[in-house]
Image (cartoon, rainbow, N blue to C red; front, side, top):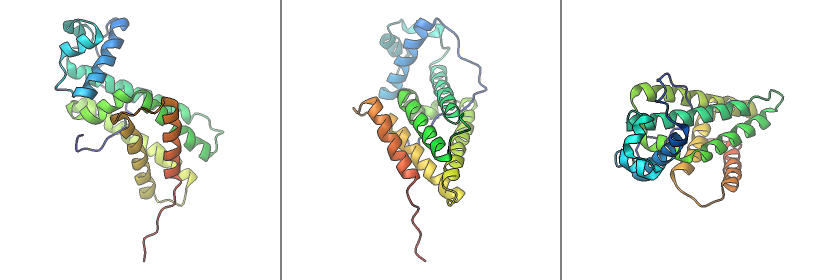
Length: 212
């Protein structure tokens, strides 16, 4: 596992979109690449490996992506878009109480992250292979996501300082993303419920007071 901290996906990218190919081929290429990047690593996976896993000739991949790095970047941007939209939708109901909104945000985030586990694992493990023009917008998006969490948490727990809330949010997000990196056999719906309950429990836990 790399030395840098895992970061969840959430960003808008100004990078140009990847080359468009036939959707029927593009989807299995995407899925095969993500699975292999996660299992073997970016550098240890060749275009031919991806093609074989996707059931297409390796050279056919260039009809959809100009390079292997572009394929990785496209996957991560797509994961960011899905998380961004899911979190936005969870907070769309202005009539929610702060507590309900926090639960909706956590549940939506947990679900979309687990449903896109390979995408998120690739970002955690392989983001160092992204070029700065792809990586920097993603980092800005991460900061926006953490701020949304922190603001919602502080609406529920105004006694927290901004630094306390920020730290609790970082720990919660890290815990969810870690579930993408390590395989487990828990049923998906059960895992969503378990992770949501654990994260909410952590966010509601009392903050220890340092002895004088």
